[in-house]
Amino acid sequence: MKDGYKLMGFQYEFTGSLYSLGQIPRCKVAMLDHLKPGDKLLIAGVGHGTEAIEAARRGVDVTAVDISKTMLKYMQKKIDRARLDKPIRMINNDILEEHHPQEFDMVMANYFLNVFSREKMLKILTHLTTFVKPGGAMVIGDFTLPHEGGKFYKAFQTIYWYFAATFYWATADNAIHPIYNYPALLKSLGFEIEEIKNFKMLGMNCHRSILGRKKAESGSAGQKQTRAGTTA
Ligand SMILES: C[S@@+](CC[C@H](N)C(=O)[O-])C[C@H]1O[C@@H](n2cnc3c(N)ncnc32)[C@H](O)[C@@H]1O
Figure 1 (cartoon, rainbow, N blue to C red):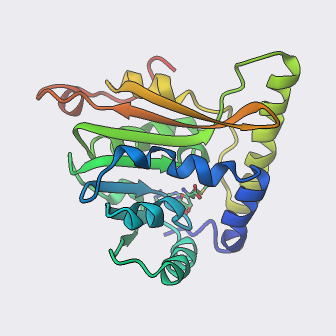
Figure 2 (cartoon, rainbow, N blue to C red; figure 1 turned 60 degrees about the vertical axis):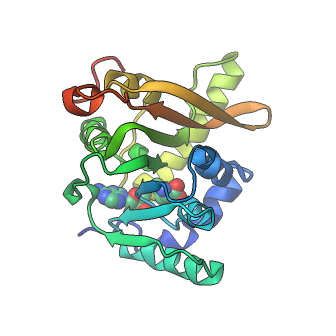
Figure 3 (cartoon, rainbow, N blue to C red; figure 1 turned 90 degrees about the vertical axis):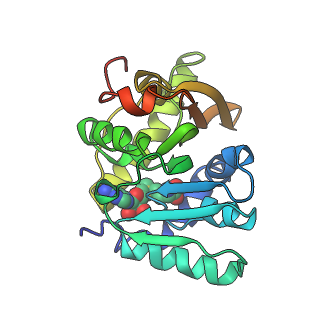
């Protein structure tokens, strides 16, 4: 399995926090309030595991998946420092090789889907939504679409995203592309957008966490969904 973060994985969490003036870590834990102790959470592309550790602290049953051994090594160091009562299930695998139909109350993809080309992102997002129980939630934390305010506002959001994307394209071979419209994609997969939390830098929305709810009725989104991408 390819470990794109072998060289630069060590600085990922620290640099992300600095680059966002502390907003990325806040964005990653923002939707954990929707869970209660004993609920099942899967985190895809978990990285150093900030939100996984916070969820485990709150008594949530956490499964964390990452393709990078390096990232999981740094996550393990954080877990050791955190001295959790509840263990976290850590899986070193490609998320597309994982199959957990309707197993989780919440599936989280923080700053994960943006590393892929549009085609692969659609495949992965569609795959992840099959893990969500009926009535459960799909949460995506990421950079904000540059769609609000005046020209300066949009230019700042655009440059802010492409600067980060170019850095990880050069160091981790990530794809470079416009920010994806996650609310529209989730809706196209049959999810209802229940909440969006915005995180500001210099007064501008730069990060957001989006919670989509899967329909609870049988025969709804879980069974009928087709591949995302028709509306976004
Ligand atoms: C941009 S980092 C985000 C890490 C973390 N979610 C965060 O917000 O700090 C993307 C993560 O996805 C992982 N990843 C990339 N492709 C993957 C795949 N196919 N399956 C599982 N993890 C993958 C990378 O190893 C990396 O840890």
